[in-house]
Amino acid sequence: MQKITTCLWFDDRGEEAMEFYVDVLGGDSRIERVQPSLPADPGRADRPLVVYGTLAGHRVMALNGGAQPFGFNEAVSLSVECADQAEVDRLWTALTADGGEEGECGWLKDRYGLSWQIVPRRLPELLADPDREVANRVMTAMLGMRRLDVRVLEGAAKG
Image 1 (cartoon, rainbow, N blue to C red):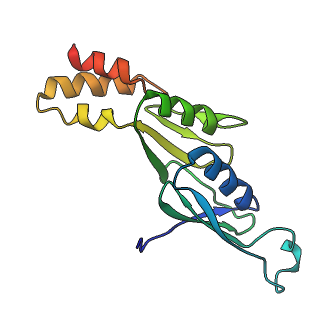
Image 2: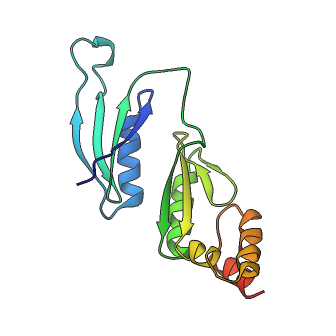
């Protein structure tokens, strides 16, 4: 059982965001429970207070906490290990659509402002190569990318 659950604070679009994430990530992703707003908060009756779910096997809760002077930033991100380039491309395209933003080195922000790292499984393997020159070439190649490209990373490893 997962003991720690990630709580994501949304102004009021938590349910919409969770539905989007479940759709994009698929697999072991689902909305498990929607907690309605409470009578003590009558101005929010049209949206749930909390949406509980699982995203690719990781428990997450989306809290519709209302507008605050803080929001998501790059200090916290969700990192997705991708099996191959096709998965990197699919997730990158979906998460940057409709207002998302590309970042550097495999990072992006989705339309809700949440930061993600879309990482091919091959990258940490290449960075852990015992030949530090190989790892350095891979790191240099990665630092010049937005969406990570496995072929380019592997090419850098070969020199």
